[in-house]
Image (cartoon, rainbow, N blue to C red; front, side, top):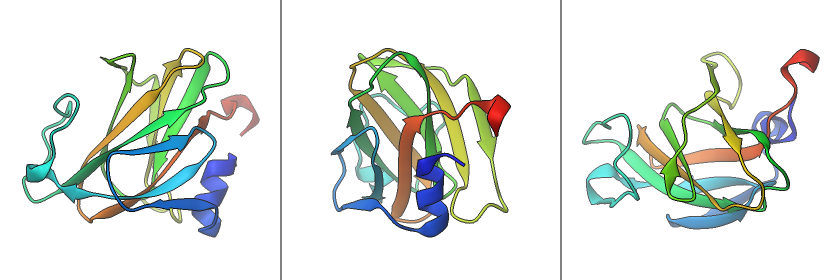
Length: 142
């Protein structure tokens, strides 16, 4: 299991961030305090229109060490949009785990090195969410 996902399972190693937007290193996991969707001005509108009574927020990760596939995992059901250099990235893989302790959804994205990466969360049903962002584990070895 990837280190970020182990943090979810053990519920440790999170940096608590009380406001959105936030800034974190790529090898960190954060517990992001979200705001009501109707009060947020997203960088770009979410790709999936969130319910009006939902929550959302943004966290920018920095320190992408090299080009590759990176994974964003969240602890609750929510929509994940990722932006690199101002452009929304298509996901190259995704999974949902309704029965996995602590991890609800993961999405994978191809990133260049050194860039700032904006992770936009929308459509969450509760005002906080754990977010892990790390290099994706090799699927062949899982």
